[in-house]
Length: 270
Image (cartoon, rainbow, N blue to C red; front, side, top):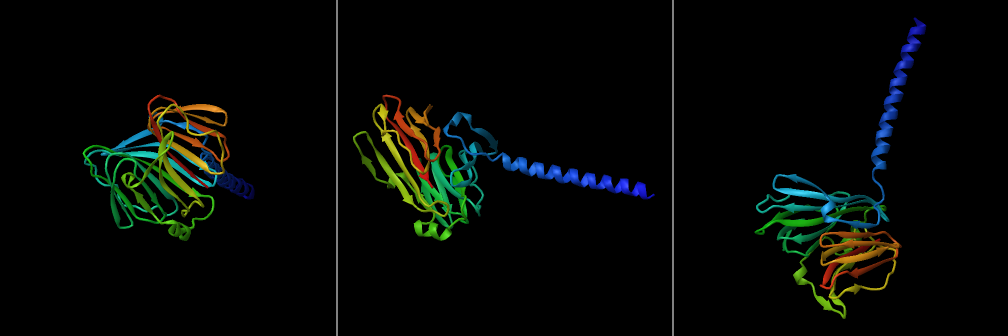
């Protein structure tokens, strides 16, 4: 009987050990899936789109980045007459929202504003938010969710200006020899020591500036025209809706690839 008891006990231990191993393996596999975002171009046509009733959403990327434990970028389209997105709070993530097309009624922490194409929202963690399509056509917007490697600093975010809703029409466009630019913000946030964002327009074919590098990670989101970019010695092309991702310290240079004007958002952070 003792021998049978010992064998039976060993079998139970084996099952427990096996289940523990499988659990740890699954957890490790899940964490391993969250890989660093690679530099290069992310195309509008390549996003993974899912339709859900009166709206659709497509993910471009999800992973980690310099100074960020988590980074996810997707685009959502609310069809005409769609119900408002359910009010919700992101407890541990900050968000940058860019209106691609349509008219948005945005509500953040009880404040409401109507925003058109080119408008931008910066939403701190722990703020109630909701978006509604109030236009005659579809409403499409990009959403960048991110969480810093360091703990969120809500006081720093509030001092920097808190959550913001910036209508593109209210911002000044400054002309330059090559085209012009429109500044959105340059500030600290709850997740970033510095976050800067602007729009650049290039009226003629050619470079925006000489190739350079910086400590901030940067995204270039193409609004219109044909563009080219060199990132770390590799050549990429992007059209309206696509964006380039440039990791910290990588040498890069942006160019207008066509004879017609091009324009793009540039935003960087650390």
